[in-house]
Length: 380
Ligand code: SAH
Image: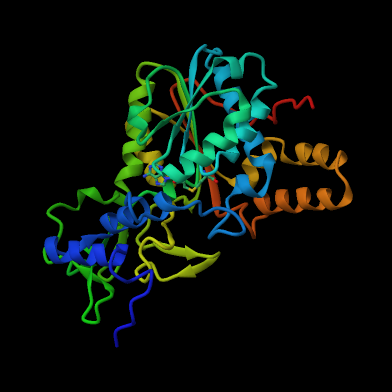
């Protein structure tokens, strides 16, 4: 039975636009579908809204506790010092959301002599709505950001880069193994006029685009997932690191080994949804394969540090001390919020273990806590 048209599936919606595109071009790959759902300039999920926070669809670590951005700011400052405190240098954030992380990071970074004065802020963000939110949030920091759609548009020179929950939003391609061959998973139109999964008619010419550990262990019926956009980001950082020092920190949810499987998920109003049912209306993400990131980084002569579980990283970097200090100045109610926010970030049953932190740096840079050292001194 056909549902009656609504604001989400009637004419002029992304669903209708995708169906017309599929009628013209044939089924879309999962990556093409994800890209359209998230970044279509007219209907894309990020392009048309600010999805963050309790009133939105999902929340992120910097929106839960200011300590997250503050500790990341300190990490950036220490990485910069290890480079020899170059001035100027490029401070980059990929997918800055509302700008909360960067505002907290700059406040903490201001305690390190010369860091803010040397920083030139570059934000990689495709959403006009979120660019406006970032401009508002960062107005008081004294730094004027420059925005870019892609990392390779950011000018060269020494760089410190951070990205929280950015890689998980980059499109993935999926494949299914049948009779020893890999077929790309696609999105087509069902007999009822909705979207459905289907399979490319022809198998992959070469299996080599799949990570070796997946090729070695997969059996018929297994799925595989790759994220070419994440590999490209690592290659861009590696190219920069050939001529200038670079340190990048990625925080995301994902796995430490490359294994068969598929992890595409949709989130709407803090709950799981069907990835195909409301294109452009739900957030679409997939787990980050940290082993693959590390593999591409290593092949491109970057140093790979971690991944560490987020909880371990934040505790080693001084989360408890910062939490105690903030609670000391707060009334009971605020102290409770500070404490529960901090716990949510590090508790293994909440975000502490699923989220992981990996640093990629040019040679001879090993920022803490990856060097085993204790947290840097916090003065206020
Ligand atoms: N880092 C923020 C927001 C995470 S949501 C936080 O922790 O709160 C993902 C962010 O990445 C959003 O800002 C979204 O608009 C941006 N984004 C998603 N896909 C992108 C792409 N392909 N290029 C640039 N930015 C993208």
